[in-house]
Image 1 (cartoon, rainbow, N blue to C red):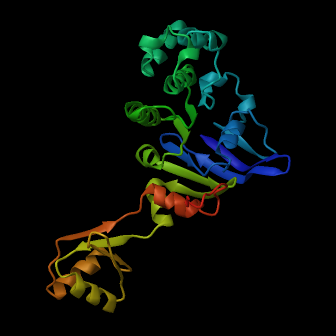
Image 2 (image 1 turned 180 degrees about the horizontal axis):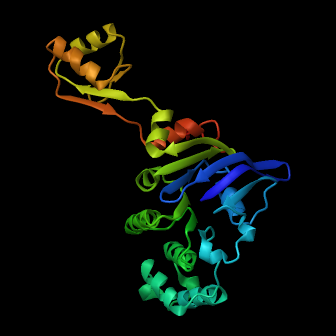
Length: 304
């Protein structure tokens, strides 16, 4: 488990993390979301002792990271894909880490296979693509078979097959009872990968909960109706207190009423309905709604 209490980090006159408290539980994948400059990377660096908090504290499995005697056996982290010797082969990079942490050669072979680098383990790491470096970083993080795993933007540089692979890997690691904490800018991927979310903006906690809770909290449901009697149904819905918009494809979009209420109203007036569905906002839509006031750089979207 990871526990942060009033975590704060200042860089000169800039506050990167501001009184941030949260828990990351074992057995689930927890996504860490926020706009650029929200303090996600700084928070992860403080968790593993790379940055010292200005205030507050953070514990990994009940103690500060600096008190962990065998770090690679307790916490695996993928924060910097470039943190390797480019002249070494991938296998020798992992062997050096393993030997310095009392880990045998057999485990190196195991993690090389887990991350799918069997055919490239003899190549110099400096020749690797970004996606291959991501896999190598994951292999290094898994060397000590740690119960806690932190990944900062782990799908950067991966192709669709690689993204699908890492999704399955993270979920499998969590299913084994590990604490898995992962940041990403890909909302669609987080919706598929994460069980729980921690959302930050300008260094502060914006929201936390399950993916479904976050979506429900930040958005409202709409009912979509398709009917050949759209004008009649629209009038009846407005009379009942609903708000109705017409979609570009002719469907009615209803706010203020549930799908059941719309269906009952249509049946009572003998109005034919071809489709009746309650729409749910996407995680991306919910994220944008929650963090709209926390975006550091926003363009107008206009061009000349």
